[in-house]
Every structure is written in C-alpha cells, then in structure tokens.
Image 1 (cartoon, rainbow, N blue to C red):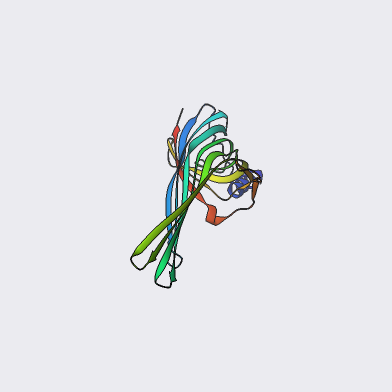
Image 2 (spheres, rainbow, N blue to C red):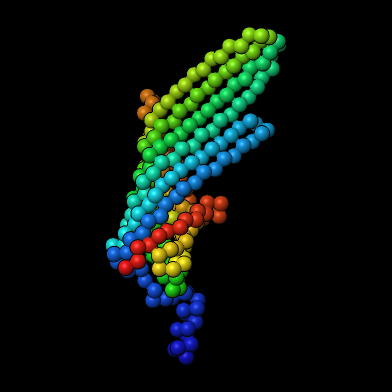
Length: 220
C-alpha cells in the first residue's frame, strides 16, 4: 500500500530526483521585433529589443544571473486635414530607447527528469530617453510650408518583478523555457522640471504575456 501511495504521489506531483547541479552556467536572452500598422488611423508601431542573459547556479536548482541589452519603441502617426485651397499633413513620431540592465535570482523545482518549474525574482533597470517630433506640412495651391517641433527627455526606471515559468531540457545542453505573466512594480522618473514619477503595477498570470526562449547550458 505504501508503494502504491508513493507511486500516486509521483504521478500527481511529478516528483523527481533530477537536479541542476551547482556550478552549471548558461546563456540565453531575448531578441524581438514587431511592427503593427493601422491603416484606419495611419498609425504605425515598431518595437525592437535585444537582451542577452547569462546565469550561474550558485546552489542546486538555484541560479543568479544578469541580462544586459537595448530596447527601442517607435510610434508614428500621420493625419491629413483638408482646408480651403489645400491641405495640412501632420506627422507625430514618438521614440523611446533605453539601455537595459536586469539582475535576477531564479529558483527551480523539479517536476520530471527534464521538466522544471521556476520562479524568478528580477530587478529590471532602464536608462533611456523619450523623444517627440511633430512635423506639419501645409499646402495651399502651389505653395508649401513646413514647421516642426522636437522635445527630448531622459528617464530612469527601476522595478521589482516575479515571473513564474517552465523549463524543458531537450538534452544536456539545450532547453526551452517559457514565462507566463508577471507580478511586480515599476517606477520611472523623468528629468523634466515638475515631472512626477510614473508608477506601474503588474499582477496576474496572462496568456497574452507568455514569452518563449532558448537556453544553452554549459553542462558539467
């Protein structure tokens, strides 16, 4: 009966003796580009980021690491207004770019021989700027005139996030990992006189926030 209960516990909870040894190192990261266009509003959104990551297991199933990289988000919106004898074309472009540093601690729990769940505590930091450019072109008959304005402000952002996820080892050197949502807090401060800090909270598991990655493990 005891053996039967133990077998049931293994089946139910996925208990396994497979462990990730102390001294194991790995490299991973995020590389992504997306583009979204809305022809109804003449709006275009582009996002790019590259954040390589390195981790080291300081204990069994316990890793520390660091991600360092760059991100850029650009939104362009164009509008046309008809006026007597001509038209006005206005274009607005908002660009946010930042250098990213993200130290983290990750704890693994074994489900099966090659499958693990993990919880990651991360402290993401961004040092970047936000730039806004507005260009207005007025055409009246055969006459065209253009005016433009531009503003730029620097910002610093820091947060604390907890991310749950799954990690499946294809073999001793390669694994596929996925994170599902995040719980955390983030605050941003702009170097503009009178500007207040911007605080954001994230809470919950969200299937639309699932991210996938490939990791190379330097097996011992």
